[in-house]
Length: 299
Image (cartoon, rainbow, N blue to C red; front, side, top):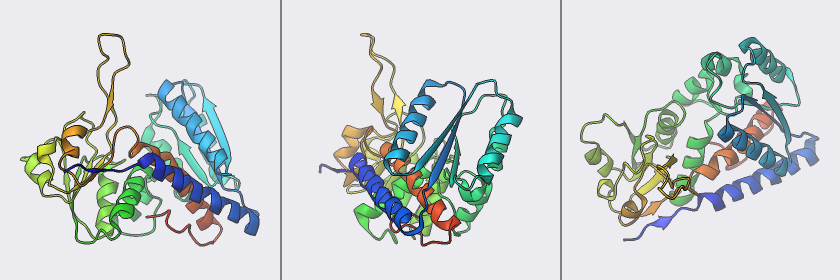
């Protein structure tokens, strides 16, 4: 068997196009332009690249982009004051503070300061609780992207057995909640799960988000299962001085021989994250203005 390769890059481009179309309609019908504010504290190179990409794609979707770049030694109180201003700004519908923040800043306090209605990352404790209890919430972008890919592939997920490997607050736990809401039978596994390969082998859907390069091998996969690989790991540079190869949490070549469908790394789940950030910003805008939520772009 050779698995269908799930093209997350193409799907993300389609999501961005749908967002842009609905943003244009929102402007034409109501004179409303969704606005996304991204705050970056410090000069972490990877975060800088990510923030630039977010800003570029926000503008391309027809939204207003507000970027706030603060020095690494910015006092926590100054950051919290900025978040308060963004919360109160009617032009801003989504607020995102790029993580990680410098060590002298309390990450939990920062996330708690963001208005839950503008929390397009879905990390505020109120949104976490709403998701866990099956209510309307802002949903973390990466799990939302995974859910979109699964729905597109399978349609109805009801009754499917899903194993989520990883229990992080950012991916593993919300992913499990979303799959439960779609009536899957869900097991949350992790690096300390006993007989982990046997647990994974039961699954119709495997979501790997454990942060260990190529941990999940083909002999763990049930024939025909769908494998969603959230991991992004860079292997040690080769002796030639190269940057090192990017791999997921799944050993792609062996898993692809068994699975029915699989996401590659790169080009699978990764592109969906920013696309879903734009979708969440559009959703937050619709909710703030009492309008219908964008069809097909929410959980």
